[in-house]
Length: 364
Image (cartoon, rainbow, N blue to C red; front, side):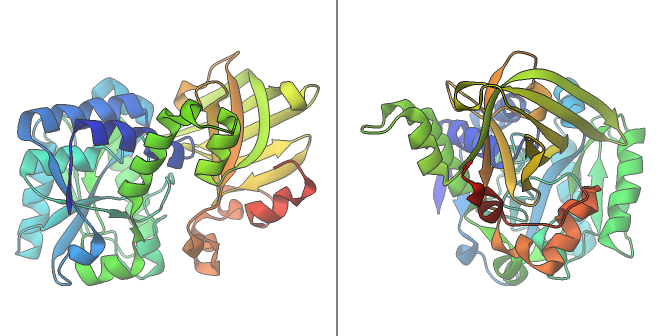
């Protein structure tokens, strides 16, 4: 048990933006929402999963829709209270704690804001260990957990609760309502007891985000290593490419940010080309026609000077970035995990090969 205040939020937002693999929203927007709530209501208590009673009701809080739209609409004052009332009334008992559903610049921050506003603790656990674009793409689905009853509310006060036959149906129906509400809403889903959360959740995600964020912020203070070497060591990352952004193709379709960023090689990659495809999060990294990383491993673009993560909605012509691969949570590499988030689910015509195996050719 420990407290999360403004300094911790700064580092968590930065580290979670890296783990968001390009998605999860703008860390600047998420950070402002969380800091505003903590300034007004005080620090949030962070609990380890082991500190949560087995029968306690834990509820993930998140935004659903296109993160770029959230940046324009923001979050109102009453959404979290509405979500709390809806879920606790349905289950007939109070919510014990909130938790993030994923890592990312926004969805790592909104649960902190909700916990601060309602005076609840936050659990150091999520359902991805990174970010994914669809709501059935969580480790809780692998464990047989149900996304519903799922509560949804927009900034205007519209709310609904879903009961569906599968988590994929939850995604389809909730996505349609999200679009009708303007492309961005607040949700609570996968309400679970502490025992289930301990078995299938990704433990320590908030702490890992904070540790990474702190290390990135201090990456140029290391002795005996270049900042790049220090960054790769800290993150246990694989360097896939360094380049200047030559073009960014993007569109918002069906509540998702789709796109492709084209890179022209710099430094040791001069004369080469690469591209990264994304659906909210980065899906594939291809260098000189060779795929070097695919989902569910993390593909992250970071600034070559500051090593701060660059989300997909901040990509722009001329920016110099390093493409880095990070290993995903082990449960995603099981067949059940790959059925949910493997490359073929996203229409990529390749089988999943672990990042470390694809990089044996010497590019890492």
